[in-house]
Image 1 (cartoon, helix red, strand yellow):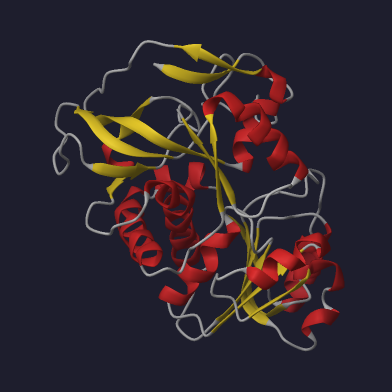
Image 2: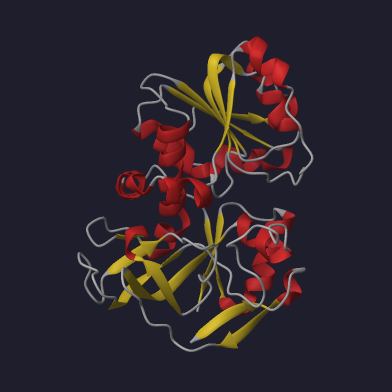
Length: 326
């Protein structure tokens, strides 16, 4: 099968096309003939080796990619509820393997898109992230109906899944923030935000408004400013570090005095510890996407341009998500 290999930790030039044997599914697994593979920021972090010391995460040579869409190729022992040829979308349990023509998935992390009429490029771009948004908002933030949500990096691949899911869960108001250069894209988005503001102008851009839940996949100074935007009893969900500020610190006295909770959400850690959440998360995600609450811009590139896709992600030179095809 055709695949994209990361031959070493490093810059995008370490990505190259290779041929690998077609994999076979083991018990509880299925294989997918991949039509679309999503490119995410975590793919860049893994390629760069930022997580090289974390046990269980891939080391070179490896095939990047967390999310795929395609059709079921074969079923492993004990797998029921799927049929060969069925259109599906899958999340990854390992953080790798997606940039390949054939993908081995744990059946528990796969959802059928047959009944929902979702195009495969949109499915892979949004459904896994929307499922993770469900897990974060319900299991970590404990979002209640009528509460308000602030989403930093509002148009980013992961963050863009939160407004639609927050709406489905009953949020009364959803506000986003973006960096200055992204404001033209924010004006054109169809994502269900009530308002999107410039993160550089926080907290003044929001006046006296305060939020029950803040979702922060940006980090750095934006995370610090978040502490001034949370109501007493509110929750800040640390869901990423797009800023690249790995040394950021939170003043815990501000948490104490403000009555604020800060909690981390990492799907790779959370979902294996809470497997019962995966199926309802995927079901909710399919509903959100089918309802048009997760529509994002999608650019499709061939596997041969995986390095270009990573360069574009690094430079933030995109509006929406990049999806690769074999």
